[in-house]
Amino acid sequence: MTRPVACPDPRRPCASSPSPWTRIRATRSSIAANRDEYHAREARPAHWWDEGWLAGRDLSAGGTWFGVRRDGRWALVTNVREPGRKEANAASRGGLVTGALSAGSLGAYLSRLDADRGRYNGYNLLAGNAGAARWASNRTASARAVDPGVSALSNAALGTPWPKVRKVSAALSAWAGRGDDDIDELFDALADRERASDEALPSTGVTLDLERMLSAPFIVGDRYGTRCSTVLVVARDGQARFVERSFDAAGRLSGVVDERFGITPGTRFEPRS
Image 1 (cartoon, one colour):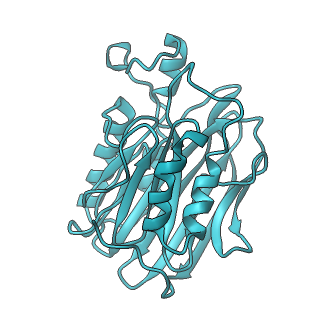
Image 2: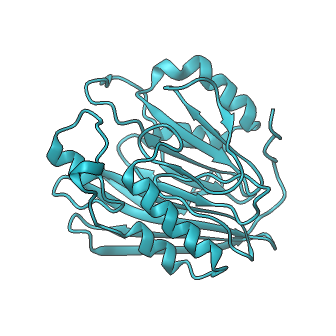
Image 3: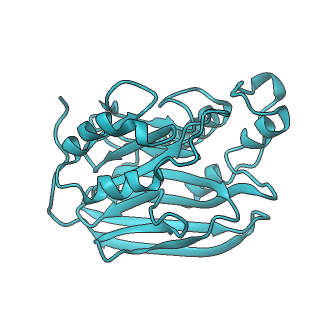
């Protein structure tokens, strides 16, 4: 999975997934993310859940990959790529996102995950609000604050410089530096289908052909690929926009969700420890 994030205010932390981005003059925080998944795994596009958050739904296990509440708390998850290290009976990682969104205290929830990390296959969980973010993974030590600015996450540790992470980070940083609020440019960065050269490929334990396919920010494959691209932008006036574009197995646009809402007061993310 690829997810980028941009923080317009350099004093504030931002999170992202395998694609990153940076500041916008009128924006307080931004997240851009691709969801890569098997095409056979059914999902419902983003919608408002009865529980009070906006997110897609994994129809196999009931969780989600990325969601945001009306008070601005958001959470997203990526898998850790580690061939040969997968428990068939592990809990669904989509439950980590719904857990972060439903928790009264996000900090307490992330602390509890330290004791519960063995229930899941490898994961990265990013969660926060417009002012702060934390990264938690069961392949590293305990959760830590995300530094202000642009951060990028794919299917390895936060900031691991895979080619697509560097590429999308550069594109998003350039976009942010222009002070442009046109989110189509963010979607253009997420839609990049160019694969990395063999010399630049990471060695993650998969076959060379699969390593090549997975190296593009936007993945197109018969069985596995980019299922949706999502951009969340929270403006300084508290107005939020969440746009999700869904794609079929051929990489063709198949649906769009565009939601705008005002951030309402609620649970605030705890300050850095």
